[in-house]
Length: 460
Ligand code: ARG
Image: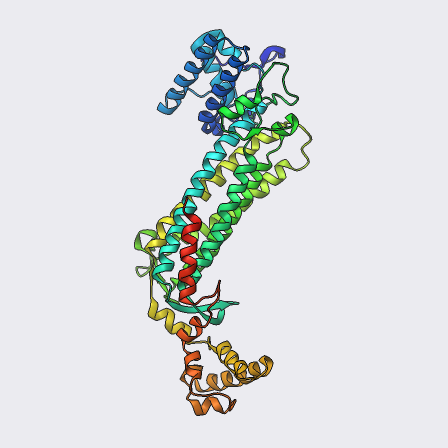
């Protein structure tokens, strides 16, 4: 293939070899090729409809592009650094293949509107894949939540035992986080779905193009309304990376809990062997590598968000070469978020709960102290006084090394004569969780209702 630069007309000296390598993007932007070709086919189709190309020229161009696509898919395409980027590689290959007609494809177009379009087309597809993986993960969470709707474990604040909760309720908290992530990605995809083509280099083009036609061929909602904005802004990439960062925040929080829960000290859960690895020196080890690695990758995605924000900051209108630096962080963010959600979706349904250990843990740390205070309030004692009374009972229990439910009635009545035999209905773990009977509460019935609603929310 000819390596002649497509912009060489006004130059008299060749490009310095290192400058050529330094400014080229083809090594990474070649993954946009299918979208570049899709955009070119739409553009050529519109040009023919507008009589800017003949039908024959259009057919020649489209057939040529399709055969280049086949070569790329087969790994037979020769990428050239001298041709700088994916756009010029494809265009030069087209002209090599079909002759001078290939040179007409770039009529009314610039690489500036071309690249802005390609990234949007690509990201739109990738967002759909990530959303599908999120749905699969949510589905898995619902199944675990259903199975463990009545399983009791301690709920924590400050990582100190707070109140008993159900494991299903905990899974549903994760579900909600991911539900917001899904809708953030949806918003981002929708805002992004406007087409830059037609903006050309920055000011639009003098040809009688039909931007609505091209937009509809490419399934965009509309053409971008301002040509300068269309070629220059990468806010959609930043917005995606921000949404992706929140996905990672959530996965890293889930990771942290899975890691703590699978420690020998907690032993609330066991992760399936297929998602753990061993140690080369300590034979007993089974490490939760997958959640650890996902937690680690979170930093990498935040880094890409910072990188993209900084890349865009203070760029004057319209296109600047700075924007070529958008691709690697964006590609990497997509790859690693997609991989992280996918591996979580595979891993979570295979989690085993050690119900007895969770229960034992919930019996420690006076997790039903608030229930005793609420009991006293129902007997006419002011909450602050009830709090004080229960505090004294807890101090007594600590001394005796007993949970509140293990004290007998006489012992409890030392702290308040209002306490009667029925107090034990409230001091048990089941009593505590099932008393939280309102929407959003941890009672097993509420969890089951939440699961039922959630299944309808994610049904497509
Ligand atoms: N490779 C370039 C990029 O990624 C394509 C656009 C180049 N435009 C230009 N005028 N140099 O941004």
